[in-house]
Image 1 (cartoon, rainbow, N blue to C red):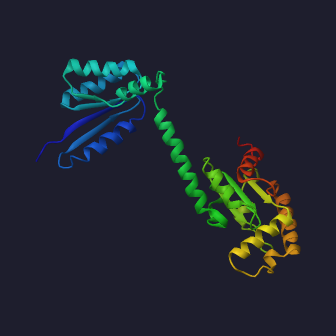
Image 2: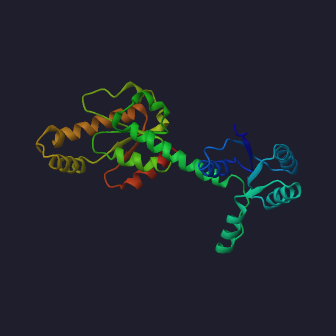
Image 3: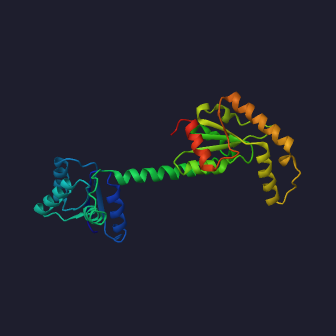
Length: 268
C-alpha cells in the first residue's frame, strides 16, 4: 500500500482558495493518497515557522496563498533554506495583475472570501425568495428579512426577486378578499412587513390584460372595478390595523418600489 503524502496549505485568510485549487489538482491523482492540512489566518512569523517545522518533519509539500508580500517572501525563503518544496499560488497572479492594472494590490487578507460570502448570501436569498413566493411556506415567514403583502397583481413577485438579488430574503403573501390572511403573517414583526397597494384603474388594466393572456372571461369578478375597489379598501384596512408600512406601486418601476421598501424599513 502506498503511504500517504502530505500537503500543507498556508494562508493569511481562510485558506479556502488554496484548498479548492489543490483539491481540483489532486482530483487528477486519485490513486495517490494525500493528506491535506490547512493552516489558516497565518499572520505572524512564528505561525509560519511552526507550520514549516511540521512540513519539514513529514517531508510535505507547502502550498501557500499570502496576500501579505512580506509573509509570502518569508515562506518562500524558509522553504528554500530548509529544502521544502513549495508553490506560491497567489503572488504571481497579484504581480501580473499589478503590472496590468498599474496599481499595487491592497494586501488585505480575506477579500476573495468576502466576495464569495456576498455571492453565496445572494444565492441563499434568491432560493429563499423563490420558495416563499405567493404565500408558499408561510410557516417560515419569521425567517424572512422582508415580507410583502398585497392583492393580486401588485408586483409582489418581481419586487421580491429584485430584492433577493440584492441579498434580502423576501417572502410575499397574497391578500385575498373575503379570506383571512394566514396567521403566520400577522405574527411577523410589523417593522419587517410592507403592504403594497395600487390605484384601482391601474389594477383593472393589469388584471384585464392577464385574463386576456390566459384566454379567460374578462368580465369575471377578478377584473370587476367595484370588486377591485373593495379589495383595495379591505387591504388598506388590514395594513393600517397591523401597522405595516404601505407603498403605492401604481406608477413605480420595480426597482423604485424596492428602494422605497428598503427606505421604509430602514434597511438602507
